[in-house]
Length: 288
Length: 196
Image 1: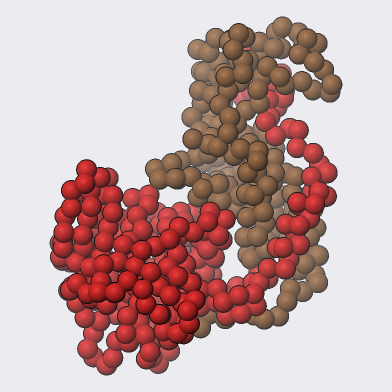
Image 2: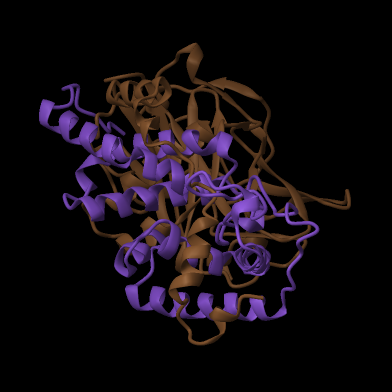
């Protein structure tokens, strides 16, 4: 028993000394920074691409950027076909490296952290000041980082239902980084255990291509979320930490035609049950 | 979308300043990480943190103490983000040394008096009973040597909130010492490795 601890709310000197002696990192050598590993890391960082240059924040929901780029909200849903497509125009040109996949792939943890912090930085440095405040963005969690072809998609989640997404494509050292995203707030207190909630799909288009994205919260019994999209058929969402998110490309949204029907949602529960083709109207909190 | 990065390379001043900060804080950051993840992963965490710092160089505080706390904050978020599922929002579990093998300045276990050995065993056992949030608070104050405002910055809370946490953490450690009998026969049964 360590009696000296019992006198005040502060730790006495002897107890503090004992606790200090139990530091698990006390043996780290000061010369570690001169070791090859640390110096190699420094060299790689200094040679890395962005050199600390700040990039513009992602586009904001409801905000028009340029003459041919616009955010639009989608309507109802229809099932389509196709698993792999070339992502054109807005999404980086028709190259093999831009292949998009209906099933997301995992991003290695180190890369995921970088992508997440990159997304955070873009939102922290938002010149429009339309976001929820720097503190909320700084403390937001990097909830989902998924890969689809050459694209990395990030979802941040924070206080007050704060959400922000970034769709990123790094074209290599010193080259252009392209990306989009949105900032919003779902404001959901509770989600039924066998369902999901969202605030609908969002679409962005230029004259050559478009993409749609959807984010939301999942109930505790939900194992998988599949969007039955008109543009790409079934799209498997990423599910992590109580959130789901997905994006998919499509043709340009021309004139006043609108983005077309919204997807339905199919849920696979942890007990193997499937809830198929749930209309967006049932899970879109912005309509309820 | 057109978010362009500059093609210009980093300025010599920027590089020199970053190099100086790197040299001055690398080992501190490794120690910070070693307390929170398995030692084999600590330098990976540090590399990620410094890369983020390089990309956010404009935000790097000029004051050395502020810069160190800022870097700790980045590393802290990196490790929190590495946790899975429901654990993400929780505090990091902080490791503690094996009280049965700790020796300083060349001393051996046999050199230590029995009271000191008992204190170490009690404290190590009590530490294991602490909630992660209390471990984190005490670790920042005692092992990382951070003043209140800097520790608060690492956690993204106010200095007042950190002071309250510190008071609660000390009380909690005291309570656990009151109910934690010394276990000299099994001192090595301390949790190690990746935070759970």
